[in-house]
Each structure stands twice: as C-alpha cells, then as structure tokens.
Length: 129
Image (cartoon, rainbow, N blue to C red; front, side, top):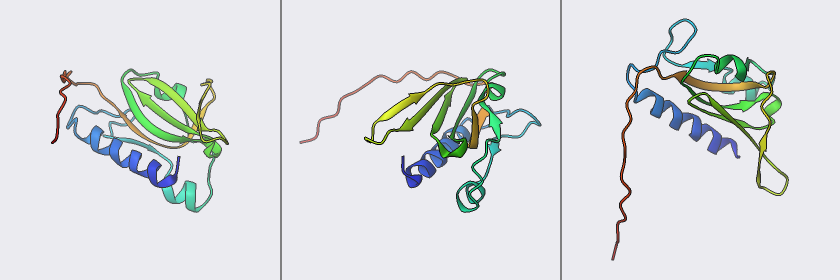
C-alpha cells in the first residue's frame, strides 16, 4: 500500500472513531484515542521499531485500530479485537501474515469502543439513466 493511501486510511479511521462521540474510552489513562508512534518519527526519522504488541491491545475487548508493522513490514487492521495483518507481495497481491504474541506495530492509532449501537442498513440499488 502506498503511504498516501495509508495516511488516508488513518485519517478515515480517526473520523469514524470520532463519530462515536463519547463511546470511546481508550485504555490506559482514559484518553480518547491511543497513538503509538508518529509519522515524522516512523517515516522522517526512520524509527521503524515496534512500539506496542497487538496481544496487549486486544486483552481488553472492543479495540478498533489501524497501523504499520514494525520495520514497516506490513499493515494491521483491528476490528473489535480481531487483528488482521497483511503485506504486499512482490507481485502486488496481498498476503495475510501470522499474528504472534510478539508481533508489534511501529505506528498505530485506535481506541476502545465501550458503548455503541448497531445500525442495520438495507442495501438498495440505484439506477442512473
């Protein structure tokens, strides 16, 4: 994934998480969002080391987030505590990576959703002439 697309994904996640307005209670220390690493550190200063283990983040239920793996070796998406790790292969196709207890993110933003509601959407097809 290109960095511009990755940054767009992070911004999109921030908007989505922000829309829960008050439903997020990031742990620890009661902050609204959790952030590990900063773009200027990871990209500009080449500090690609792991900062947080995914196993620690998902000990508490209902974590949502996105991030870059240590050494920028792939991407992470976390939806309700389920971690999905991917990497782009040399042929341009996505490859799923195995999560281990020691897998870490160099850059991650997310939060815990403790109070939410389900909104069911019905699919409609729209025709244009």
